[in-house]
Image (cartoon, rainbow, N blue to C red):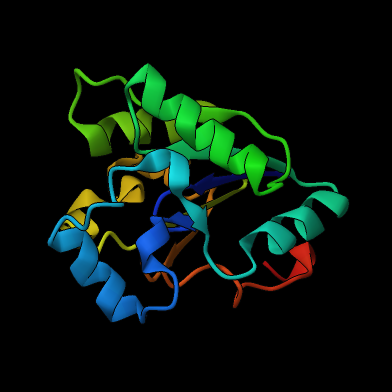
Length: 164
């Protein structure tokens, strides 16, 4: 089973979000809080590390998708995943010359994950900016897709993969 999970807003967040409500965090992003673009200082949301490790123990292949497109930013996200002991898994990213949501969708279509988890993009454009919106209908119907509340984490998702 392949699980593709979006990083920023879904399993990691900017460091100044720590201790704030989800609503406050969304406002930090909208107001461009200083740590929002400090990708190397991002932290896990909730118990995301433990949840993904548990799924990996059950046989899932964990893959990641970042909103970062510049090489140095992608490296910072990769380093954050390693620093916080997220399970090993390839980190996919978009090319900067395409409309981002559509480019992300092409990545999802190529990977064809069994499960795709992303946040609802509340701090930007909402559903219009979500990746799954642009995945072709033929592929979309084969993917178990979850849209979680931005910065709300994945803790509520089942621990047992057979329940997803």
